[in-house]
Length: 638
Image (cartoon, rainbow, N blue to C red; front, side, top):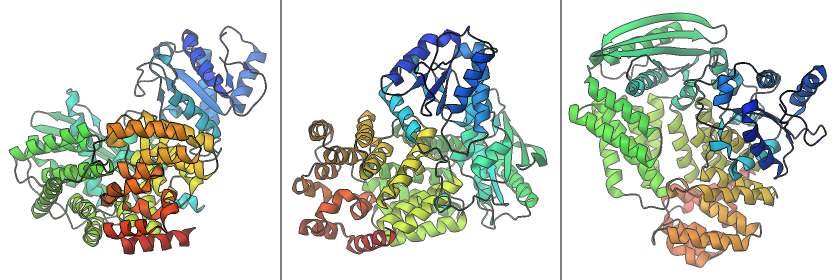
């Protein structure tokens, strides 16, 4: 039960709400925030009460900037307590707020899961902060201060929001939620998720139907969020939900189509089939959904083949790990796809899965300073081509070939492949994201931002897409929008992702907020994996140098240089950030195509744009025409 430890009615205060048994933990949190200048309304006496006390609590919850509920096994055990009244009051206040305004900041101090938490529904719509052992970190304090400094308005989610357009829900729009796994074996979670994703992908090919992407639809898995609220957050008119029970060689799927506006079930049915006929039952369900919405399935349907159940299961497992976008995830996905092909060498989805693994893994490696492996690109292309021979309807295989062509600097071919992918699946959110990289590299920054807007409309909870959006908004010098987008991304995930903080640091520097820029730049140091740093190191060093933290930048640069391989191309941009352009040139001349667009737009290169050495660099990279168009596009946008 908080009291105003620092008296007053400041609107920038954090209201700390906790159970009596968590007093010591709450005090550590309060002290950490207070020591960094954050006003915390906090009290250690739960026994006070009466009308006066109750009125004071209600007033403070109404006036505070953030409500911070402390969640633990103790709160789980206590089904009654004054803290629960505080939580309900806070949840009720959100009903008068615009969507996206930061207010509730749940903090879990142990392993209490969101799925089983006894909390108001409003708490489950927000990414929780986890403080192991209730030990506040510098990152935690920084995040709270950032939320307190955020504009008290809804955060931006799409280009439509930037232009002030009112958001309208398309009458022909749908989300497929993660189907519940009713099988006894928890390993079947891959299977039930995969069935949901395959149904989603089938519906994505229906002409005229907008389909929310996997990342966003699955965001609500394990959360007791009402269907109308899910639909509102995803911007869809209809929702498909269901369950999967696998037993031996049979599968039982229950599916229902729900009108989000009134919760009315348009239809509900149960399908029991042999696993080898899984494609047929998915086609049947998709057809029922389409007919209910007065639409027709695409003519570009997949071959109506029976499948080997174990090969199918392995492909679903592979897709699960591929979506994690980590080194370990890529490795496990590759293993699953290869095992599927041992069972069925002509299983097209397994070949397409391998193409995705090799293409995206190589892309990530190139952005992390490594050299794109020729063998990896050949494998990706060969697997994608084979997948298309077996099943011409696979949009993902075309997108994988587009990525290969993009990395190999065959940009006209890449554009053609992306067009093929979108022709087959106009709802392919991640492909719009990938296409935006190509457009920016070809000098079409305005089109790139529009493409990212499409991706976010289809997949509003995609953390990686929001990070790339923030980076490209920096290209366009739209710094306030960068802060809004990074705020939204951080509300989804509290872990350190270096490129997000790099983008944020650059935006804050450009806005003249040097102290905040330095704080964000220092967050980049907390990312321990070079795999995920991408271009953030050069941005952190640039911000430190420009903000006057020269000694800190020199020390950090020396540390990072020792950690890199001698030929790592990341050395180039970092040397340039330190003002050592001549030393940077040998590394810059070997820059991967995935980073060319950074030369066109970012201020870090402004001081050398008239330098003959820079002109020779652009010529050597083979992107003179694209560079010229990029500069013209940026000038037109500013």
